[in-house]
Image 1 (spheres, rainbow, N blue to C red):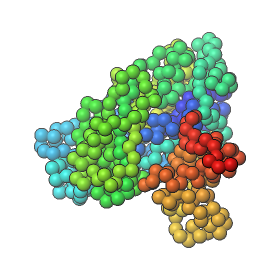
Image 2 (tube, one colour; image 1 turned 60 degrees about the vertical axis):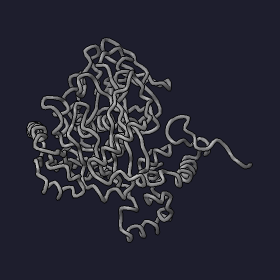
Image 3 (cartoon, rainbow, N blue to C red; image 1 turned 30 degrees about the vertical axis):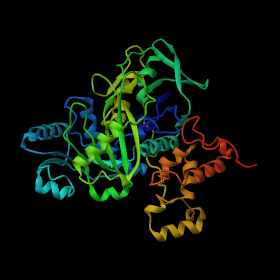
Length: 480
């Protein structure tokens, strides 16, 4: 029995890991240079409570359930979760009906630790919130994490349980016999025998489905622009701060990050046509992000705190809901698509549901293994451990004493470990170690990271890339 999962984002990686609990060969195919480099790496990184999703939708069904799974998941896979809580703020009593509607939604959806608070309690929760706000919906179960590490750690655990991870290759079609996919074809020319195909291709779920002759809802791309602020901004905000939601989405937020920074954004603009390469930012969008942040937390819009701006895309359909379905045309093909917000939060619940409920409908007999190991070994960060422990590590491995990324205090040893864990690009190291995520955004450390990658992989420095094909760092020697 052999299964192919298409897409190495947070959903695809968790699906592959869930399948590896059973007696079958599982192959995860990702067309990017690394795991978690699509939608997964460019979003708000929030674990939502689940009060914003209309009851009866798949979003509502899986959000609160997924949120509750992250405690155990983070302990097993050793990624960070900070349960800081969230608030949705309102100015006056005229806004209270909307807060009550969200509260009622949350109760129906099974959200825990949810209540409406007045101004005095709001100020205790968020001291620097604008004085204009008099009410808020507080959700204690909301949290922040690092989405890319959820995907990377899931893929690592999947591989350690016998799964195969293929990167930098793309599913281009397959051979179908008697309404079943029996072979998956890759761009590289490799052909993979298949008894089950799960399409979790993110922005490209419609495109992948079409390559097998399967109709799914038309994908529409929505772009969100962000500004990342320096750690100094964290003195002004403790929790995830939402404005009242609108038809466009949850609004432009202020979000503390796991590593101590602050995110402002996102915008929410539907793109004309299918343009997945459009990750551009705009002056208009970034100004609106800044203004919205200042509206919520006065003083947060400080130009001296700007580190970078970026944009992310999310896939939507006219139904505004997840699309999770076994194909009618092909018995053993399942699509898990349109994973818009709160897709990160819902991901572990989606993976469990698909494997337990939909995979058996595809004529796949699941036999549970008794040797599945759900944990990975923790990768120590010298920034997060005691001085005594750092001293012990340096005595055994001097590379721990050589700091490569000054901003985030990342040692050479951590970068070497990231390469051994599968990083092949500078961004691959960045997302595994946070080297390059700091104030200088890799301005001082990227060159040394590239040299370490070249040395560890025995590659020419000219072959080391920032991320995707063509993103070379050096093109030759200045002096011979």
